[in-house]
Amino acid sequence: MLDAKYLALRSALISPAKTMATVTAGSPPGAPARTRAPVSEVPGTTDIATVDARGNVVEVTTTVEGYFGSGITVDGTVLNNQLTDFDIVPVKDGALVANRVEGGKRPRSSMSPTIVYGPDGKVRLAVGAAGGSTIIAQVAKAIIGVVDWKLSAQDSIALGLLYAPGHVAAAGEGHRTRGDGPRVAGAR
Image (cartoon, rainbow, N blue to C red; front, side):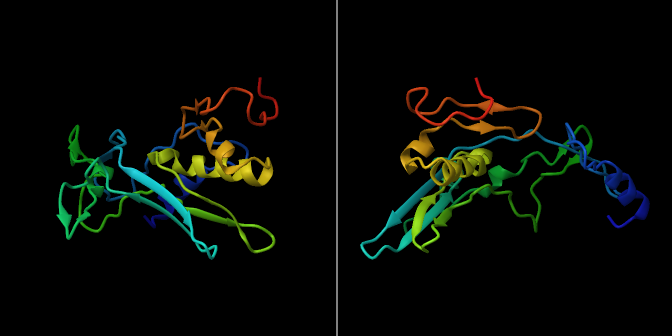
């Protein structure tokens, strides 16, 4: 990873003038051949925000990966199954899969429970989301709706979602009647 020629080649891929359409994993000298495996999302994430009578706020995003996680409970607690965040097949086309299961790895997570405070120091919004890799975009959309567009939390969450995780972009219509929320500049 610290080979000067390898670092120079990887650095040359970065341009301040444009984004890369696709980014492929590097192959440092001496590293075994690896291949990328397709990503698969598994339902099982829950988000909850609550406020007590004193104004204390809790915002929690949790996941057990799948409807009942690992299928194992301890003292009534369902244990999660983060193994679904890894590729269960360790080798593909004769090369090691980069996201294979092995000791010491930690799964990627998009969970982003967020509490937003106003200038007065009081909680203005507590928000999180379920939805795998779309979670960060959903939370950002809700914050923008409340803080920048002055919508209620409900109306902000109900807005459609613009999401572009790479070379593919997706746009959702939202959960309310069209035209409810503010229009994005230049949108038709």
